Length: 77
Image (tube, rainbow, N blue to C red; front, side):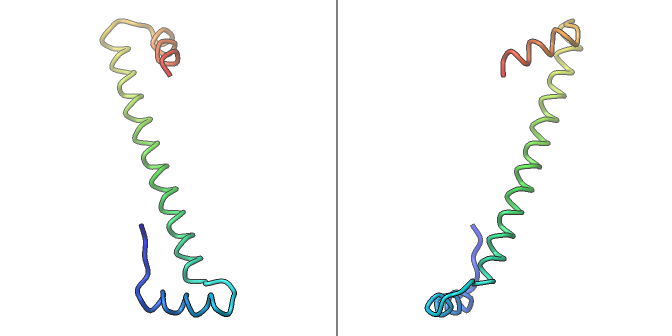
């Protein structure tokens, strides 16, 4: 959750009375969206790295070939 200070809220309230875009909130929304996107990308990269390392260890320790390990992984997802 992102917020602005009270001054921005008062100004935004007045701006809504006369109409038009409240640029500070538009920027706040765009910044929050960009931060959320970057967090999702980072989380996805960590997830992929974790699962690739796990699959490599499975290939190394249980004697499966790469093809069989990939098939087994794909069938579970």
